[in-house]
Length: 262
Image (cartoon, rainbow, N blue to C red; front, side):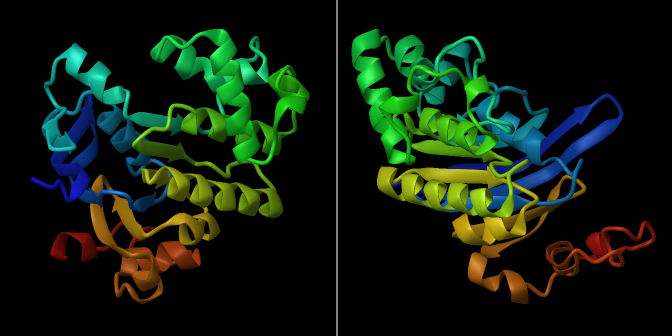
């Protein structure tokens, strides 16, 4: 049977004490597509991503990856599933004490037991795929600009040829030109790998450039999802306010009952 969706989330809830972060997330991410999640700070984007990764255990609901249920799965099953994932963390999250090539090769060496010599060769290939190469391989992250660090982090995310790549605010802290460079590289790398991508971002230019589909999260629920070309004509007041950066609207109006009546 062909699996149409790489990731399926059904009625996913997560609370931290009295703070209810995810309140019934429903979302499908088709195989080979690039899904971008938009929404304001504190709406649950990062928590949702961490629940899919298994870094946080959802309270209830269903999260399936390739048809396999992840909520309540064994540690071994989660570890096996994690081999399908690559991740570009917000801020890059490179290891300061390791040279660039080792940062890129980290998952190959420690996750796939590849020898350092072969891992270095592959790491340099991945660096070349993001517009860098052997010239920076032995430098340390602190010796690189912010944009170069993002490229290294992207090279690390794709080093194991993952089936699924998560991007957490990939353009944060970058100037508009370098942000566009990173967006171009993300699109190219995802396409070349044939991977399924999930990105969370506030950056609408980035979202529009790398997405096939966009979903908006508000107060722990997906309030709209659709093809990127439908974003400007979504007809959803939450989406409309967010993408145009308007001060007035249902997101900022605590008296609004639009979400409850939707």
